[in-house]
Length: 264
Image: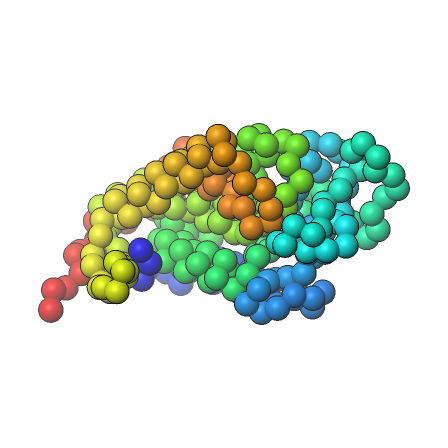
């Protein structure tokens, strides 16, 4: 299912949402300067340097780097200070607190950033409209940190870099479903070779999305899969719960119930 548009008109220009979209795209393009490809994403060195690594967060002052090879192929290996047999310091590493923020603007490939930006563009503007520009920006950034915290709590010793805006966007989704439970979303649906556009309740679309995160996250605990391509499901869960918990406390204006899409 691919959401296309909600039925709540924007009352003000979504300045922060547009700025976040632009920053994510710019950061993605800049990340490719160190190697990698437009569709495949940045080089492994960039991912390890600027992604958030739970091991670094739970071992203050320790940094990680990767050996020669490819993380995706399994030939490379991430090693960290403090691990048995590891000596020396990796060069040119940003501070761990910095990577907590840079990781929110890093993406592993074109489809990764495209999917995240689609959700941000559809669900962000009306949450921004309800919270105001400044509160929305804080909500987004702190939601991303909460998402990273949830992922780190689940696997504090993981050396797999966490990157992407999806944790912060999950906070936006949690806020959206609470503020606009009766909203409806035009959604593109693929069923084998059948393609159609339907109008779905936001509660259904986002509720199913959240249940998927719970299912796959729980499955990952019993059958963990490593590698840089792993999805940080608990970051999504943590961000979503953060949005549910705090969004009402930040609302500065309430919007009326939206109309249904016109039927042609």
